[in-house]
Length: 341
Ligand code: DNO
Image (cartoon, rainbow, N blue to C red; front, side):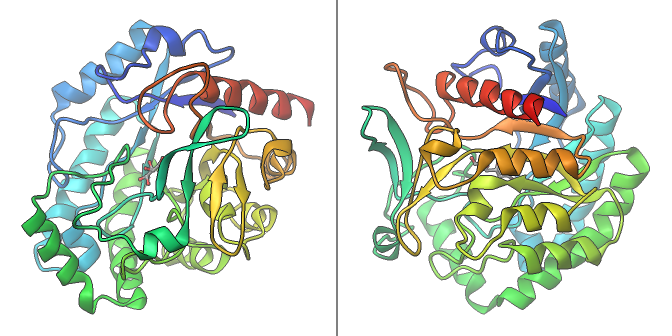
């Protein structure tokens, strides 16, 4: 297992100098952020990123994310070129030592929360999801912004894009994902990159948009669409754990050998759909973190782990979910669990 930490590049307040002081950190998980979704990344930008990490003694083997262009998810004729660009990105990333690429297939929006700074009892702040609030939210006017979202659209473009999804059923979206995998996985295999699809967060449709990577059945279908080690998943405990029917240990067993990356964090389930993010330890939320880590270790997992969203503690400010302190506590907690089982 290699412990990693997400880094948002040179502009991130959490610097490589800080990250390298977290005990036993192997490397960072990052991306090229200066290029629009769907275009080929400049080799120069990839090189700069990797070199910056190596100069601080950190590995740079995981990219999160190489985003999938909406035309691919929509299955439009223009998808062909975007898929070619995706393949070219994999070839370029492999040249610079990238071993794992995390991506998602969520239409338009990435992860979603209704509250970005919800106060917890101990005075810290965390992200939270309230279903009622989300049902009443208009994505065109909500003004919500989360790390990792593509915010390059004007309001008109966003409206147009949302309309394009009106005819896209879950089954259609799944077929488009399968087409994408059939094209991209052979290239990933050729260049030695493990692809790791991230589950939908939360694992149900939002704003009338379909979401399909939600639990055991969909993960099984994805893995068998192209039955090859390079076609794997990111096991995200918090995303899958929000699905009340998901048995996380069972999912780890089903995906054995195909989990290349793990995002570990805890959430406190409130009712059928609502939840609050919490500190990482099992006692702070609803997920059994020790069980998850044990199951991963027993399954022979030898990929990358990163602590996932942290609370804002000790007066820290910054990107929601991506401060230094609580994530660093998360990393050392996970390392302890790993060592102890
Ligand atoms: C949120 C992250 C996601 C994730 C993407 C992967 O905190 O887990 O934004 O990076 O869905 O493509």
